[in-house]
Length: 160
Ligand code: OFO
Image (tube, rainbow, N blue to C red; front, side, top):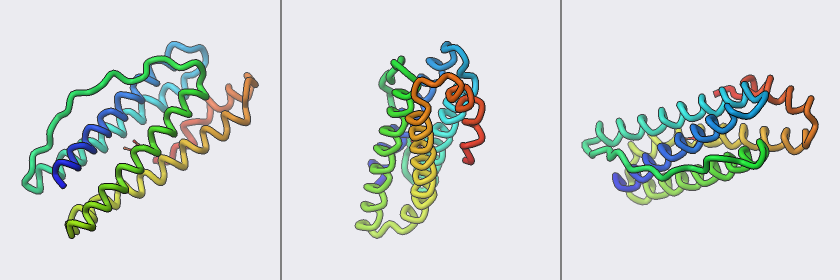
């Protein structure tokens, strides 16, 4: 279980890096101030998810391992593509959390099972948000005023 939780530490750290890269990319695009804040905020949240796991592993008598990270995707052909990547990424994370829940159940590790519930709920929220952003961008298409409103309102969509 410890090994699997440490793999999740890596996944959360990589999520944080991926959103950091999205933030850096959007920061140099014209008119994406809100989106940029959104990506940076999400990167911070993923780091918090990683730390939460790390502390849990250590508190339970294990050793939280700080992993080496791969370079994430740095540039995107459009904002829509960036958000598609984000949704894909969140679905992968959800799958990985579900696998952990499965393992905790099989190993009758009820403390970890209980701990993971927070991540299950968090992933539901993150998937909802990612889908909502993708749906909106699909609707907006190339409409500049739609994109303007998306950028203005994106932080209000994010209730986490
Ligand atoms: Fe850690 O929740 Fe997204 O990836």
